[in-house]
Length: 144
Image (cartoon, rainbow, N blue to C red; front, side, top):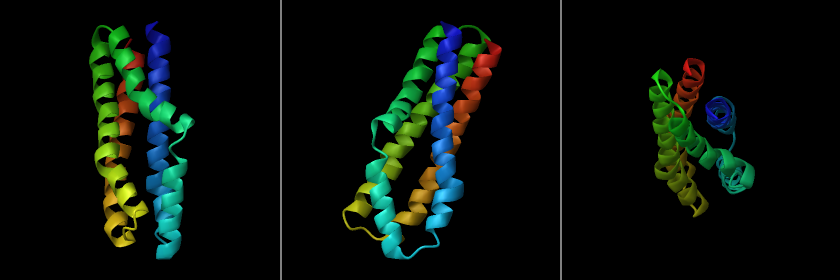
């Protein structure tokens, strides 16, 4: 059971890391070039659209599968699975404490000036935590 669980946890972590990486290196730099109205409208629409079953499956599934990986992994691989879990939970925490409140404020009529720089910084943090989770879980799979 260990190998399929570690594989699923690694894939879910990779999907999360890819999502945030894409925002960091493509979406936000592109939106930095548009006017305030286009920026605000686009971010508001995307923030509504992303709360869908496919995204939520990986957003919540990544830490759940990492927890399952911890439960099924032993030996030297277990520490790496634990690191993957901590980082996956960190990604959810950063999103909940950093990005989501900014999204909500923007949707409620907040300004781009109050949103953009802070949101980008929080996104970089969750890109790092989710990429760390991916690396730790991949290493756990290799070590198991």
